[in-house]
Image 1 (cartoon, one colour):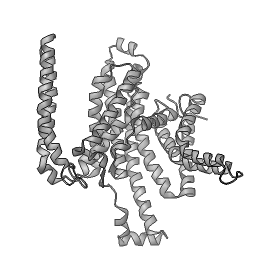
Image 2 (tube, helix red, strand yellow; image 1 turned 90 degrees about the horizontal axis):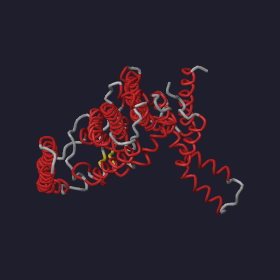
Image 3 (cartoon, helix red, strand yellow; image 1 turned 180 degrees about the vertical axis):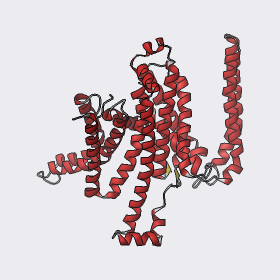
Image 4 (cartoon, rainbow, N blue to C red; image 1 turned 90 degrees about the vertical axis):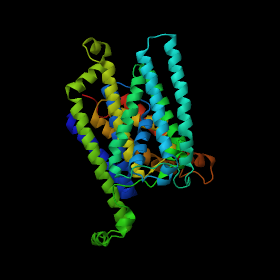
Length: 434
């Protein structure tokens, strides 16, 4: 079997799993899995750029995803006028003072000769700037958070169309990627993993506690949608007429229409990113990145800027993850900072990349779709399996109760088992790199 035919068969089997899910458990669930699978595939594509192209071990994926979700809030939510009047200007002025303090410290470091005097001046600039920043920022943030905290308590956004938040979320994540890359990319791969994980935890901690920006643990709900609401469709006479002509229940038809609309939007974004990633992979830039990945010393000896190229691809991969985060917040309609668990869900994205095929963009897409399907379906499948296994046991048996309860914990066990099987029998993934 040739490689293209094998790849088509694998994607065909993935489509068959979705069809079986739709027939057995309903099309609403199947389309929900597809939509989150498309977003997962985009995340896997971003990680594949960093790891598959350049060998960068980023364990802070969820930090960039959370920043993308914040972009959805900052762009699409309506501004809270009362909060802006209470302390919005002071918040912005405080942030500007904090940024100016950092810039001043950097300039002192650049312009003064190394020595004790420079160290003292830098410390003085940072200490004075910090206290000035807090003196301006804290009262403004407290005033913003005190404005009707049960409903708002934050500055809100710009009230723009939510689709604009997808590239903005990517830009926010790219900016964070630049800062992290300038700081951590000189580290060895294991230290880079620790650094990115720690920075992701910091990002999520900021989102949890800076309520003036993201409402913290109270969450932001009601993020606008790029598709109609189901209720609006159910009130539309033309839609009801079309649903009746097809013999569909209006509630089911509206849900199906919304899910299909989301699927079309997400599929367009994924296809565009996949096309760009393939162009990059097959370009001289892509060949250079793989040469750097395989042998940094030889690439540097040939005059390649290894650290600069690493920073470049780290920013690109982070931007794609941020865009996926904005899309996920749009799909869910809310920003929930406490749900972004860096280690747990980063592990899931890495399983997608490894199982699909590290270094192969199509493999990353397949891995994203397959692993998300398994993540959703393993629990009901496990419950069915345990029910079959324990069918002959008496009701109330401790073993039967234990096995039935264990079905809820099948997800991580199954992910680990699949990862071990793939690494044993297909170590380069289902669709390996050429």
